[in-house]
Length: 329
Image (cartoon, rainbow, N blue to C red; front, side):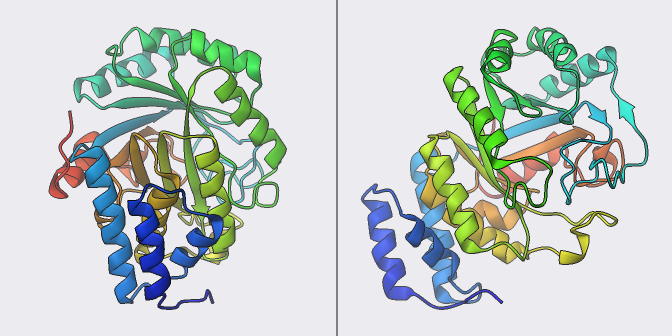
């Protein structure tokens, strides 16, 4: 059981430093995460994060859409993921054709999202990915962010991604990386460094958060994100997929996710947007102003088209943002 306590005096001191524009410490992050979810400090915390986002972002909300290109056993073997090579739980192995990808991109662009992500498993052929990306780029408005979400790579691939038209990369060091995955933190950090060295924007996330993760672990990833000067930040709860090794460990509550989102917003201070995944309206009162829609495979789902199951559509996330007072393009 995590330590839940009321820290009113400490919270006030931390909030005053937020107002002064100071960076919060790891210890500050842990203290805020220890706030009880039914305490008065909980409401003050989410109000402070909401206040900061409304001040720095105005009422601008952002809709990002991600297209999963393939469903296949993945060598990353994440113990929480439906695509892990030792516990593949998806209904079928699939790979979208070039024609299907381009058609889905065209349909998505018509709905005017702010960013388009292309996601693959870690073993997807990178040359094929780059070839498809070059064609996709031609379909995107000039101002639209174009983001890669693939396996680990070095500086050569990072530069190729930039040449293909990508403006950013989604990449993280997961909680319990190397324990709950077959990847190492060093591999992940090498990729983070390559992204930055190539001049690509880094999109980061504290994830996948489960009940067993400590507040210290979460705080470490918040500080890492800030050190990389991320402009777009997120946090994500682990969604239990039955049949995966971590399924029995359960999930955190939406209240807990909302608190973590608020603390992440205050600690990392991303310049463009703060996201939570999967979309939860409560978090839009805690500093979150950006949500993801998903097309194709989703690592938290067992169907090949997540829009038919767990995934949210562009229209759905736009409506959630609007209901919370955020306008979108």
